[in-house]
Image (tube, rainbow, N blue to C red; front, side, top):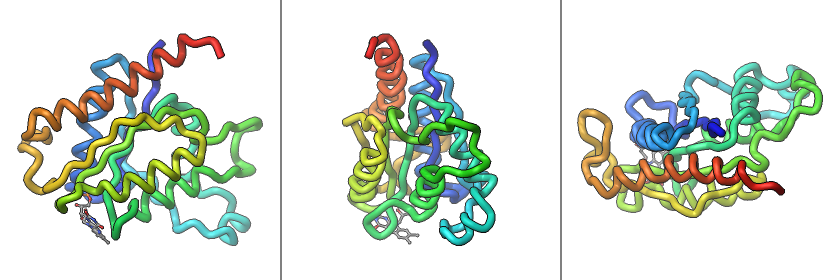
Length: 196
Ligand code: FNR
């Protein structure tokens, strides 16, 4: 069974450290056999969620595409920046949109997050590496029914952590992020063998 994985950063910034980080995890997942699609949330510009807007216009087309990707995957890799001690508004807004049903959804459409295996990580120039945001992200996705893998990594001093090729200079950190991707893929493959 080939696990289908969606990977993205909670930052739309071009030189985002979290984009670099999730690319490493995606590599690890691919090496373990997963079919990984890395997306950039900048390609899915969703307006700030507003129930009146939703009632008027239904789900935004980018929100619908984003949700479809999630519904069709087994696992998700997220590298989440920390803004003011929590996850970025872009990431939370995307999650909020993806949890909404819409008339445009195919009949019997499934929830975006329930039962998905998720591995999370963060990078920040600060000393805590965005760890506080991961606490919130873990709680939010756990509440939506995701199977949250216990391993997580917060990369501090992110402005000095990557080499020119986008890899982490610290071998142990590089391995840890590769392993998060690998373990996600292996876990999904194992899960698929079980007969619930
Ligand atoms: C930040 N940053 C930040 N960093 C951190 O470790 N803890 C924090 O609470 C915050 N708060 C915060 C708020 C806002 C509004 C911004 C714009 C930034 C710094 C942040 O980690 C840094 O900009 C990262 O580079 C963002 O991640 P990407 O875009 O590099 O992935």
